Length: 137
Image (cartoon, rainbow, N blue to C red; front, side, top):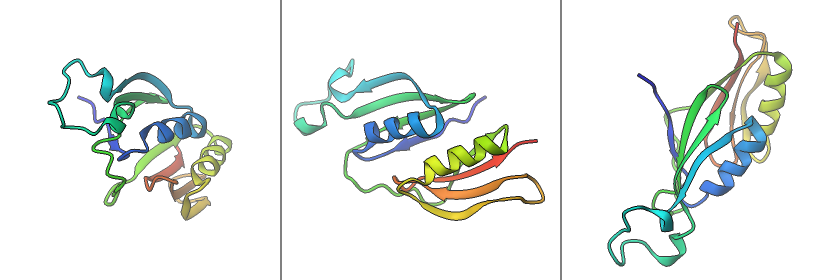
């Protein structure tokens, strides 16, 4: 059994994918646009401007999978009630990914030593996705 987050960016999926490639080394395994759907939607279901939007993408971040879509492209993302946790091997890596995810975002808790990790911090990235970064032991 696996748990894989499926994050809906409501029109900013491709931008998010490019950001995560740089910020956390995400690798794109598959990217399917709405126009490439093997089962075209009924006529009039989606406006023409959605043709090139991300219907489904599969990313690998470290040993984990993150799924991405533009959803209905409403521009109204709401990532409340959860955070993605990124466990890294070193303090240097924690510093790097925390800084990258913070670019254009908001720091909720700066990276600091805690009782459970030599580095732990929380950030909300430029898309509104919450992240908890810490060095695993």
